[in-house]
Image (cartoon, rainbow, N blue to C red; front, side, top):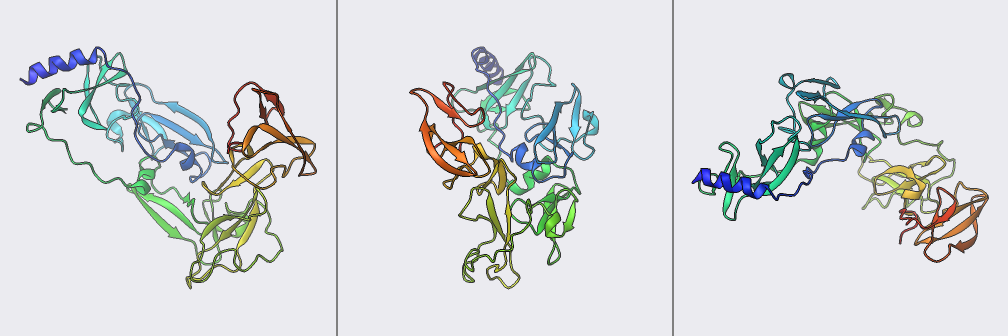
Length: 350
């Protein structure tokens, strides 16, 4: 019976469509914003793909280990597969990359499905209704013979440690006063001593001026008393200054549980706006902001939030006049021109 199911599976594979595995984990770009510059990490969902992070959290290099080799996140190098234990079990992103032609593999997303390797390319298909794929016998069998394994509860925090090596101090995207370290696959959070803030560059806690949270000198202006909420409902973390597109405050977590009455103020560097969703400074065209988008621009044109066909002329960092591109044209702030190519920057969408 099992043999016939296997034959049926092969026939179904003849018309199977190719699609990518959908392992869900933290994006590489988000991990790069946490780890020190020039750290090499394992790409989530893969055993052979790696990426190197730059000083600004960007990806500056990437690669794929050769056949028979896997990436070791602890050494930051490709090593023989026999010497590396892949934290993802096997290569979920390219499971057929190191498999022989004609190999059947289980589908980690669906126990009724399977993967057929044809010349290193994945072909996904599923068993007939009511049958599960048994990875040991490589065949479709009744559920009574091979019940679907229970899925383990995911741990988003510890998923970072599947890609990052042990003992690497990482910035905490939600706090200036703590940092994170992986220890045998478990993510641990450590708080800096009072009055110090974590520096991704220095890999340690330091003064505010050297920390990741300070991209500009603090202002001498006294922040309004309610900026970090009330003592009964304090706000902790990064918040917009509610006046400009680049200014933001950091509300520290106070030991007494009350609101921070002396939050740190900073501004994103020129060309970048504060993004409250990712707690980061991003390219101005990729941030929604309802304040004057001419900030930091002079004698140039900027996109208008809410309409990608319109633009505003910036004079001394202030919007002075508005215009619109011809019909079926869009304004591209990066090229400073109207174009027929659809422009869909977050900085101009509704």
